[in-house]
Amino acid sequence: MIVKAMGAAVREEAPLAPPPSRAELLAISFRIGCLAFGGAAGQIAMMHRIYVDEKRWVAERDFLDGLNFCTLLPGPEAQQLATYIGWRLHGVGGGLVSGLLFIAPGALLILLLAQAYVFGAHIPVIAGLLLGIKAAVVAIILQAVRRLAGRGLAGPAFRLLALAAFLGMSFTVLPFPVVVMLAALAGILLAGRDPVAPTGDAGAVRPGGVLPAAALSLLAWWLPVILAALILGDEHLLVETGLFFSKLAVITFGGAYALLAYLTEEGVRRGWADARQMIDALGLAETTPGPTIRVNLFIAFLAGSKAGGAVLAWLAGLMALWTTFAPSFLWIFAGAPLLGRVTRSPVLTAALKGISAAVVGIIAAVAARFGVVLFFAAPVRVESWPFSTLMPAGALDPWALALAALALLLTFGLKWPMLRMLALLAGIGGVLGLSA
Image (cartoon, rainbow, N blue to C red; front, top):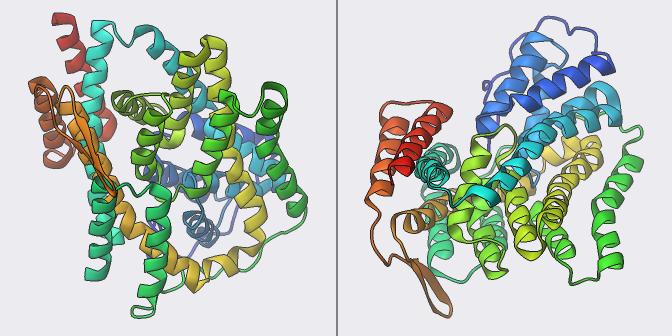
C-alpha cells in the first residue's frame, strides 16, 4: 500500500487556489487518464504533483487523508483517489468525471489491444513482442515484491505471515479470497501484541448528496448484470463475467498483482484463457495508461471471443470494465463522509496490515507461477487434496530465460524505468520473432 509516500509529515503550504471550474476539472482529469503510466505509485505521484503542487486545488493533508482512506478499500486505489479528489472539488459530479476519465482512455486502449491480440497473437513478430513483454513482466512483479516487502513486513510475525501466504497460494488449494480473509484475521490477532497506529485523523467531509449517489452507484453496479440475466438467462457468459468480476472487485486488496494467481486459476478453469495469455494480458496492461487491474477486461474479452466472436467479446469486455470499476464509486460516495472514522479504526488498520504482509507472499507466488509458465513448454499441475502446485515440465525455453535475466539486470542492476525496460525487451522479442 502507498501510504504517505509524499512524506511523513505534512509541510506548511501556501493558501489554496480557487477550485477549478467543471471544464478545468474535466480537462485535467482527461490529461491524467491519458498519462497514467507507472502503476499506482506513479499515478498517485502524478496526481499529487498536479493537484497539490502545481494547481494547489487540494491541501496536502486532504490528499494524504484521501490516500490513506483509499488504501483501506478493495479495488484500484489510484482510481479511487482520483474519484475522491474530484468529489472534494465538485461533489458527486466531480467524482464521476475524475473517476471515469481516469480509466476511460486506458480501458478503450486495452480493449483495442485485446482485439488486435485475438487477430495477431500467432503471427511470429507479434509472438516475439509478447515474449519480450512477458519476460519483462517477471522482473516487474519481483520489483513489486521487493517494494511491498519493505513496507509490509514489519517484524518477524509479518514475515512469517508472508511466507504462509506464499506457501498457501503455491502449494495448496486455498483460493485467494480465503488467503486474504485469513491474513486479515491474523493482522487483527497480531495487533494485540503490536498495536497499530491509526492511518489518518480526518473528520467527516461534505456528506451532502452522497447517500443518494451511493444508492445510485449500487444500482448502477448491478443493473447490467441483472438485465443480462433477465434477457439472456442466468447461465450466459455476460452474467458469469459480471458476477465473477463483481466478486473480484470486493476482494481485490493489494492491487492487481495480488489477484493474478486466482484470476489465472479461475480463467483456466472456466476456459476463458490460459496462463500464458494471462501474462500477455498483464504485460499489455503495464504498457498502457491506467490501473493494472484492466487485466480483467482483457481476459473477459478473450472469453467472449472464444464463446461468440467479436460482438460478444466487446460486450464481455465492457461488462468486466463496468463491474470492476463501478464498485469503486460506491466505496467513495458511501465512505467519504465517514473518512475520519474509517481511517482511525484500529480493527480495519490491523486487518489491512495483515493483508499487506500476505500480499507480499501472494505476489511472490504469482511471480513463481508465471516463471514456470514462461520458461517451460508444458508445465503440469500436480494435485492431491489439499495440496496443489504447478510443476515445471517440457523443454526449457532459453530465449525466455535470457530475456528474463536481461530484464532483471536492467530493473535491479541498472535501475532502468519500467517503460524503457519494457520497450527494449519487446523490441528484442520482436526481432527474435522476425528471425524465427
